[in-house]
Image (cartoon, rainbow, N blue to C red; front, side):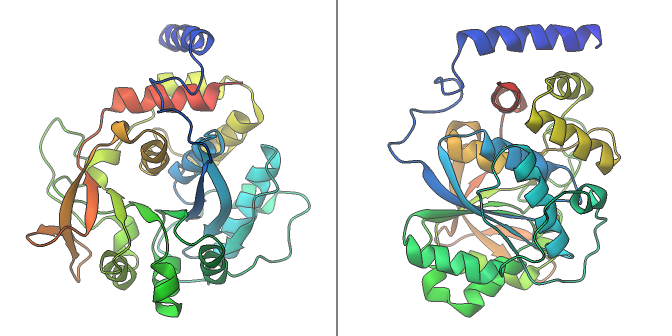
Length: 320
């Protein structure tokens, strides 16, 4: 371990001793009943989905009533989730798979997905699962959308009235004022079509017009770099969860992850980590999320503190 990593480890270990994972620096008081959530993910290409799932699993404020997979080979993505859940001791969480679609991504973590034991031969349909859960718990479910929006659009098409009974949708998607590579310093990058929106523009347009309370974490607030010091600290913890993240990180095969997706979970647990403001957003035919005049249709987070985010994330993921 490098000297800088050792310093961070020592500091965080001290914080862990003196602060409960549920202290006020990380979240507000626990609700009487954990919030019911469904996570819709394209886990397996980039690595940030795995970190988002890990953070949700380490957040007792949330009750994960299901995980659905979307985009490309959604069935193999579901097998990846099966293995991850089994290895961290949560095989009880239902997993459903979306319909297969064309994919421009690279399934970097396929070996992990195909290497699990006791794999299910197939998974239930994601859209049917989501709608069934909304019927069972009307007004109680938050849908966390951290992948392209195929399942979301299909659910709206199949039963818009039931979809409208979601408590809210929390979306990682869009680019309002800052594009890829704009970290708030250096040359500004103009807004760009963001990956989750770009890969199913019609579904994104349906979601922004659905009338469901929508909370958006765009590129503006989610380009959060997990640098070497933080990685070394986290991957040295040796828990089942951090070991799974370590293996998936190495299969991803790149160096410094950008943790776009975990901000959705962080926001749900502690909204002060990504303050939102009401904006009317129109998704145009090129996949740009354009702020316009008109009644707000989304609450959007345009800025966040990387220091506060990583303090929250690392304490949660590293706690025994």
